[in-house]
Amino acid sequence: MNDLELDAFLRRALREDIGHGDVTTEAIVPPGATARGVVRVKEAGVVAGLAVAARVFALLDPESTWRAHAADGDWIGDVPRDAAEVAGSARALLSGERVALNLLQRLSGIATAAHRAVEAAGGRLTVLDTRKTTPGLRMLEKWAVRLGGASNHRFALFDGVLIKDNHIRAAGGLGEAVRRARAGVAPGLKIEVEAGTLAEVEEAVAAGADIILLDNMTPAQMRQAVDAIGGRARTEASGGITLANLAEIAATGVDFASMGALTHSAPALDISLKLI
Image 1 (tube, rainbow, N blue to C red):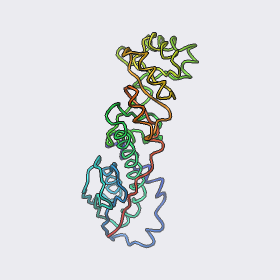
Image 2: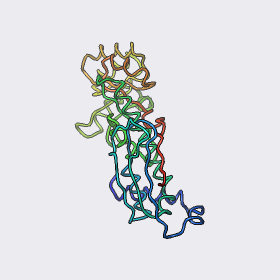
Image 3: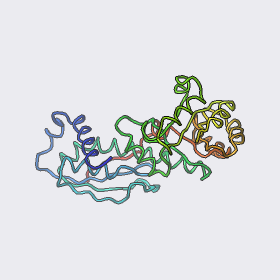
Image 4: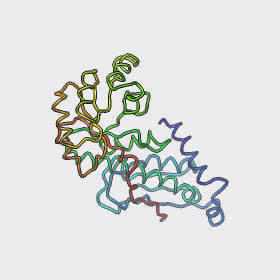
């Protein structure tokens, strides 16, 4: 997301929240009043979205100032801690607070979840996100995943082939789906296919898949699949992966583990804005 796209997105978010006017703030706070506030991180985690929050206030008050005490991607363990200070129009700070915090808390929660997943994997596999993101927020959410130390899977439908069960049914079989994909996409584009059984794993290897997604397999089944593949394709564990079982999955020898929970279920990090 470039600067113009970010600004357009933030303006939409502000219009959604402010609408025809912040009636509470406009009734209470004089137009020329100024204020200063601190962005306070109250829960240990990886902070992500400080630059986005700063832009929210800048759109409402171009004269506002932002002083960061932490950088996006920093682990903040000693809490509470003030990660930034913002000063400017009191109306701008009050009216922009919720949009800024919603994004900052959401992105920091995702970055923290990614960080914890990478820690749990212990460097034995690459933790990936998925396309299970909030509509309109994918670029920011995948950025937060990277800030947390995990990696991005394909961004969208246009930059990677992932043949799933419904594609297989539509093509009339796993092998046929792989062959059609190989013939129909640009050379060099990796072909990944979902397999839920050892028989499907063998079929995927025989069809020439580059990556085999081991769908909802147990760790024992994953280990069998990795042994059967024998390095002829890379492997990705997917389905039901949690912090509790990541270490066990990493021990099976798979190359990747994709976790939709990084983006669809990450709890927001506790962050507030306090006027001082």
